[in-house]
Length: 152
Image (cartoon, rainbow, N blue to C red; front, side):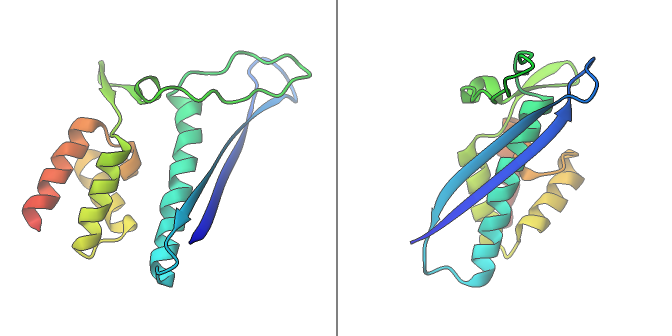
């Protein structure tokens, strides 16, 4: 069994305060089969890093914002329940982000059809206008699953 650790950090300026910033960080550890070949391992690294990067960006732009920190304390990112973390506004309606199971199913279907993550993301961007499979809402993810299943 192989262990993969992926981390992503981002510093952003604090509004209204000069020379001050907040730091956001996400880290995850996953276990991989030691029977994977080099290309599969690279794909898992890419997927895992995209997951932590998107989690930090979601917290910064779509998730709940942490309370203003005291000047001596560093803020910590709150881990929200999936239902709260997954909501974003899209044209006046609230769309719930795709579940991890939907995303994994999409990636598994795509892989069985010879598509890599970059192929999936290019198709998602073309069809749904989002930059990544991880940014799909549940309805779009369901539609994409149906299309992938029909193509199989």
